[in-house]
Length: 302
Image 1 (cartoon, helix red, strand yellow):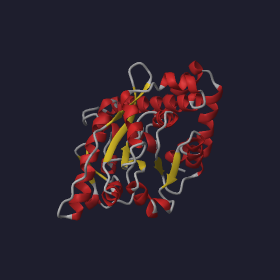
Image 2 (spheres, rainbow, N blue to C red):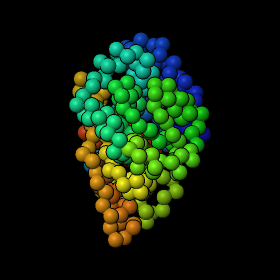
Image 3 (cartoon, rainbow, N blue to C red):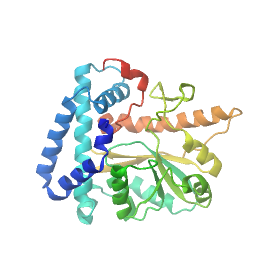
């Protein structure tokens, strides 16, 4: 079992839930930091090599190995805090309102979801996105979220938790994602999906420029938005300096059509990913991406 599979397993999710629900905040944060430090110390672990490589690129390709090891642990520590906060505050409405205060940008995306004009939301794996989305739903956000296809037991447990607070989750393997989503968008629905998880089977000639380097990222969301004739809006969760969780969104991205179909696909994807880049630059250590976004760099000693 790979390290990613272990951390995404049902056991790992249940362990995180146990810590979050039953440990006091100070103890939960302390244990999360200790576990992050322990995991990060095993530098040869696949997940750690992937994080270091990803952090190397998004931080400008200037960091030494020693600095990347520290950045690796920063990412894991932030992830631990996010998981603790998610499971500790998800069922505590008043505390959730304090930790994720409603902002003008959150109100705007809620407003957009009620216009019945249709749009596609794209997001990176940044910070405590699940907790922020639960707050949006409590304030009236309407939409569906695409999740990883054919979810494992750990992913399915996470999806069950998401659905428990009202999120409409649809795995990409669900027939609706292929047969009903475009009509749903045309009729004014809102669909959200992550766009920064690399595809293991992507051919190099189909790599997309991301942070100045070619990457095997998905681009199907462009095809979907064009077929439904809806704009794309990039959003992200982010932890603010005061420890609360915030939210950012871009202006609507109106897609362009080019003579060449591949240009239409990849140039629009790169336009969209530029917005994602700006979000990640705000807080690189909050980018919780455990898969190799630039696999060609894994052979380097980072």
